[in-house]
Amino acid sequence: MTRYQLKVNGENRELDVDSQMPLLWALRDVLGLVGTKYGCGIAQCGACTVHVNGTPTRSCLVRVSDISGQSVRTIEGLAQGTDLHPLQQAWIDLGVPQCGYCQAGQIMSAAALLEEKPTPTDADIDAAMAGNYCRCGTYNRIRKAIHSAATYFNAATPPSSVSPKEDVA
Image (tube, rainbow, N blue to C red):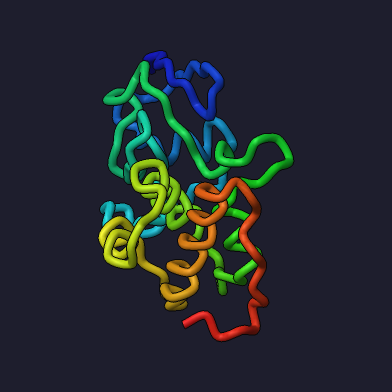
């Protein structure tokens, strides 16, 4: 085993893991950050999306040894203490998840989009979210939540809540 240094959610971490260990398993099994999910294992579903140096990355295929010394942000690193990230709040306000399994990856991809394009169009959202699959089909709610969080970022006021029972198509 070899020691690797990562900055995970702002904290310097040292991992003593096999050089072939995927980042996903290091996060979940070694660091106990279980918000990132295993979906397909071939980087096609997006459930394992995290940010590596600010870029959305499928953690199931990235080896810890390949990103040693870099910065990783997981779904657990989006909130500021007890204050949820605007995307997390919008997801709750709009009742986005059904089963919820893919949602951490969805939110991480959406967070990267909003950092790059604070006022995304539907086309921007569709392009950024391509490859993040939701078996429950909540894509319209996901898009609406991203727009809601963008409104928060651009207006510096919380997005207005929409009842999850409202038609968000």
